[in-house]
Length: 319
Image 1 (cartoon, one colour):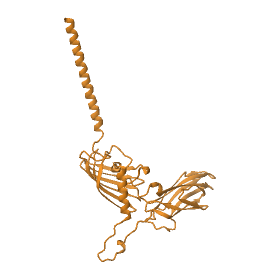
Image 2 (tube, one colour):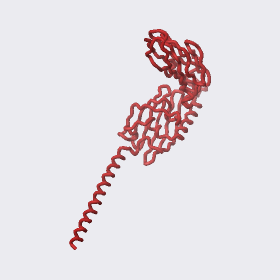
Image 3 (cartoon, one colour):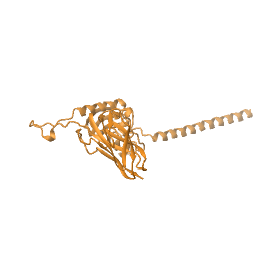
Image 4 (cartoon, one colour):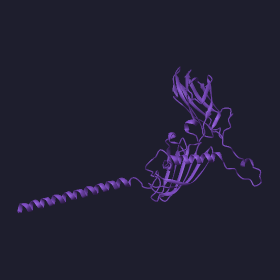
């Protein structure tokens, strides 16, 4: 009988200890989960899926503007005001929401609110400010695109892209009660905006050495179906030998100074159609200073919205 009582007490203590241990373990697990979830804000962009409505899109060949309302569920609603400057590649976003307000600036090589998946580009974040640390932007994270653009589905991006295309195709006309439009009020049709993006490659070479350089041109305006032309010239101690790679929509010819002619898509077209990348071989013919100069639309034969971004030069030292 005494033996039975002792065994019963030991068994009771063992069960009690096991239950207590499990309770402590569950408490620790719960605390760990709570700590992990606390690090992920529940009401910050990018929050998907979100619905958007009350869409208003305006724009020109130089800038695009977007305004819309959003509902990400859980009471997280508000409005977005965003814009993209096609000349400077600057993107801005501002959010007013039930979870706070925020704004941020970015640098993007293409409009992040309308970009297709195959044109996806990483943006660089600039200044950012929010009502608090995690809402409406989680400043502890840096997505590849602006916070509000990251929250858009591909279908929503296409919706904004179509609205932008409609806005560019039908620019507003200033009404004049007198029936005669002044010069400043006349309809200004969108124009191409050709950009000499860069000339890149080695800048320190030896006498007699040949090197390959990359040349990039882009159109930030409406499509330029024909008449896109540019020259590449070697100056000083550097001379051009030949084109190494030429896109299929361009032809190039010439010696010393090479001229290329072709076509480029517009700012609302896929990036691959509005950017052209060339490769050229240059020869260091003597010691001294030289350069490679890219000049787009050199004779201004194509009417552009901006001629100030048509030239790039790369300085080269020949040893």
